[in-house]
Length: 164
Image 1 (cartoon, rainbow, N blue to C red):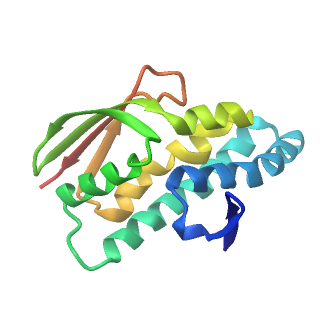
Image 2 (image 1 turned 90 degrees about the horizontal axis):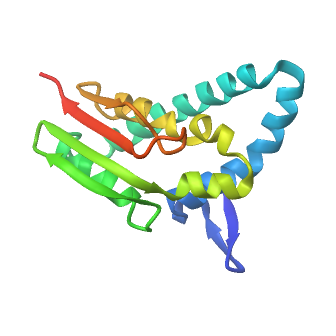
């Protein structure tokens, strides 16, 4: 799939994660809004979230399938890449070979969803993928998160732990 970026055609896989999520939200939000009129907001969000959780798991499996290791350390490196474009800002609280704790204090995903008028769908569009991504990447890594900026929290507190 190709899209326009600054007047040029760019392959979808060359876009940043934030750019991909914006395109996805612009494409699917009108469909979800129409679906909401028929089945209600809760059912519409449930379907949207289930689809995106499956996509998250699939992405984790794809990353795990790339030759290399699927350790927590490798995952932490991948997660750091997600914010390289400034879409996520925060601080690493703890980083060992068994734990990785990071607090995201600024989320441009939430900001962009606000601009698009789809913040209420934001968790089901994006945040819900985090847990299932980790499941697909390595079932021995567990993610615990108690809040998200998308849902009004002061930060997104990601606690990754490698189980025995």
